[in-house]
Length: 171
Image 1: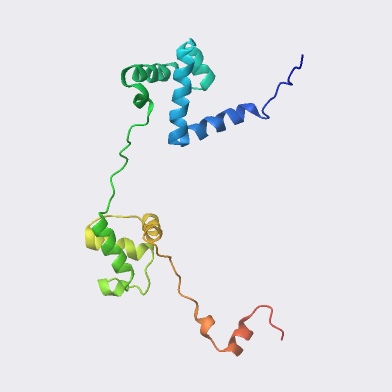
Image 2: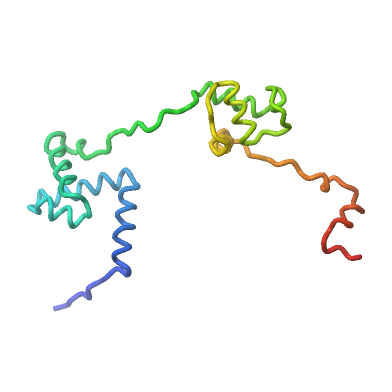
């Protein structure tokens, strides 16, 4: 008769938490997790015991079992989560995108380049919506723009002056 060596997971306590987080992160994994919970209960494991095995609250398993009994597999699927409503419509985003293709001066903003501050000022002026600098920076990326900083004057300077300016130039 052949006996298998018992396998263990190193740092099991931490890994259990990491595995549970991973299950909660994926919509499909959450559904599979609920299926396993209901399967254990269907096989005769009590809700508290199944909950202890799976790392869930017993009351949560009771909800899942009840929903499964009432709605079948659809009762275990994630419901739609509406989340926070968007601040801008597609039309408004289009207007912002068009504005970013031009100069802030075209809209009465005293700046040569678009950045988080100037975009925030434009959005407040145009739509009456207060948006922070960080959100505006994210909006740049969302609309496919990059923030570009103006190059310093030294980049366009005389090559002799550039050599004189360098820290490690040979003198």
